[in-house]
Image (cartoon, rainbow over all chains, first blue to last red; front, side, top):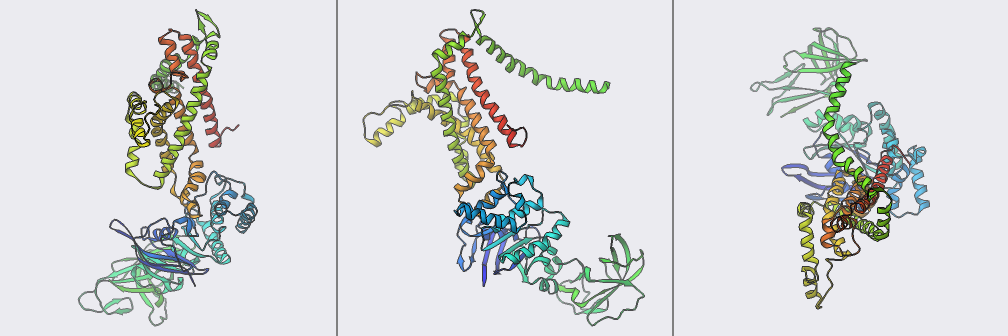
Length: 346
Length: 276
């Protein structure tokens, strides 16, 4: 059963459409990640569910109850803020207990629930500390404890990992996913980091210019992007644009394409392409793309190199990573499996 | 080494004008006032202070109580106003509450005399509404004085408090509302505690400005008891008694110093610095 349903949400700021007919649903215990570039409307969507943005039109239901016109304090959704928003004048215990006090739980129940939340997030020892005595990671856990302790119907996470450094972020991804599954709370997770979304979400919604372009499992969104924007936004890609001359067949590497309206955009999942020496014999599977080119430049990235490659007959330069070592000006071939490149005409 | 001396000298020259202003307009008059408060017939004595406590102890108490009352009312009004404007944008109110800032005390005093007089604007209106013949005027009573002080002081305090409320990152407020707190609850549990330093500043500035105000108590206040400043003026104008006037001045200064020390200690604790 869908815990959260957002139907036909519209919100404009002057001429800018922040939400343009947005429809989403989150099932019980599901984690839906909303991704998109800055200004795509993902934070507006999150804030409208929390009740901080007044919609122009549309309806929001939580457990089938229409909450569209309810003030934020009556929605029973808990939001995790990007900057954690821990109140500096309260201790960790007081921060976590705040929502329970507002709900008029008795002292004993508050203590028990707060201790459970602190224990759950492994921060029991920090209970008497003030937020300014905590590290970023600890603050993040306190903010999460504060959100989950009230047992919300929906948990809203606004870029929860963006303030942490890269190493901790990787570790917390696993923890967050495990935690969400354990708690079984329907969760909306907003991020601009597609890798984070792919690794943590049950489903992903890709937003652009206020519209939801695609909703699907991480595999669907990665392997079957519905349009050029989604294909380009997800994964590490190189795009080749080719304008067909007259009505000729467009030939790219070993493949030929029938000309359509506009320009051919070839999105290549650079992380799945293999760079090999030009002379190496390769058996291609049906539909695989083979390009030939020359190494123009390279960057050392530790375990691999990042190559700048000029493809024969194509103006644009491709950037592809490979563990193999090539020299500048060396002739190479690039093999791209058939489900790792996408063709769009626009 | 020589360069260091030269740099120090230039630094000294740069702060010299400000230093001189401080010496001549603050330190010197203060020391002179303290010195004079101990002089009677060219002899050092406690006599002036004796007179202060003999004749004016009631006025000193009255000044402190009146000023504290003004501070409390002003704070309540400022916090109400700032809370309202923090949650709701209302340009008209935003502009109107600041208007009194631009009206001189003398004009306010005169306007309030007319407004609060026995047959003033307020009573004319009230007698008609209540259908009574006569009502007492407030213009020469503690109520009129409190009213006028509040009218004058609230915009200053509200300006400081509202500035602090608006500077507070919205996420702190939204986090509380998100967890079920009403707007009023958010004000008491989140906004006010987080803006405590600014509220303290507003309170202390209101206290200092009220206790040192002369124009309004002279024009609106009752004949007795009086604010300290009015007593000082009488002591000089009618008795040419600078000794007692200065002793009264030192007493009001000490009251303010107590507040200043309390404030500095509070700020040090807030910043996690010197405590206790």
